[in-house]
Length: 328
Ligand SMILES: Nc1ncnc2c1ncn2[C@@H]1O[C@H](COP(=O)(O)OP(=O)(O)OP(=O)(O)O)[C@@H](O)[C@H]1O
Ligand SMILES: [Mg+2]
Image (cartoon, rainbow, N blue to C red; front, side, top):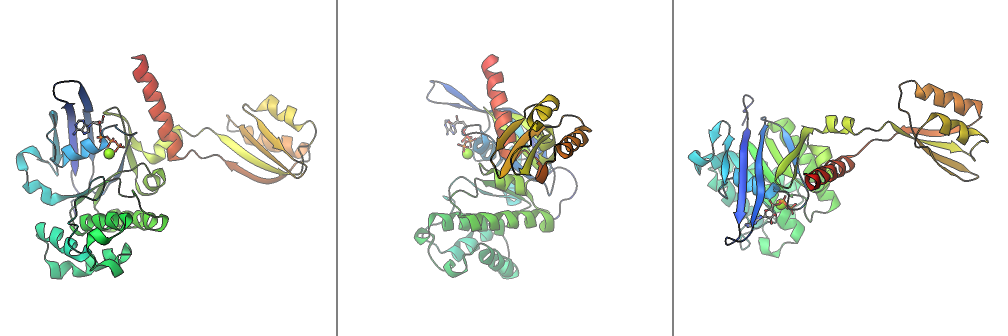
């Protein structure tokens, strides 16, 4: 399972143009390139129609790209198809890749069988997955009799059970309840950490992506508009905004003193509590702030730096990109 050297996945100048009966054409994927290292967990983000699913389908050889290349562990997918698929498993949007008249367990046996996994050897791992995803009491139930979320979980379990070095998950948390969504996050983290598996995860659920992925690739209108570590993206969007809570009303004269020093001051005050938000652009501003608060006799209950979350970063990047597209 360990492929520590080299590149797990390489996408080079990938392009997919759909032509609808000669009428208009859709540039679903417009010349994108990226690499994923073994053991990396990458989030593929983008608004509806950005080209995420099309990209994943092209990588898996399910649709033929208009141009460009995809390589898995250095072997080009097009010229090693379908053998190369033994290296990858996938859950595509929805859970159509299951046999609905077979039970949960039969589906696991069937899909792992296709991948040539010795059933007896891996039985414990399959059971571990079934347990982890809360499907133990449903393992002998036909998939068609499961709830939507359970079908989705079964699809994810089947993909993970195949033990391939690369796993693609397109919207895996769709329809999952809070607890299962949490379990999926924890399982994905374990997969990367303990099993060195490479995961490409597309999701609109930013909490999941922020929690699980080290890096995100953001697509918009078929192009890659950001490809960076989550940590770096957060740092880029950190505004040095702070939130303060003071006990009691705002001391007289403090608002004017603060407004003179700090941009973007916002104050909400009641006789019991004062909430403030302000920006501290310079590294010494925190000392100035503390001096002003002390001189005014303010009693600080809480002070915290406002952290951007992935959702805000994502929206900012995608909106900026839309403005650029409109202007060009
Ligand atoms: N089979 C197809 N025929 C024609 N156009 C298609 C086809 N599949 C996708 N498209 C178009 O390609 C574009 C990208 O679609 P895609 O499904 O890749 O987006 P996505 O990023 O996965 O979106 P979502 O977040 O909604 O899942 C869209 O404009 C879509 O209408
Ligand atoms: Mg999609």
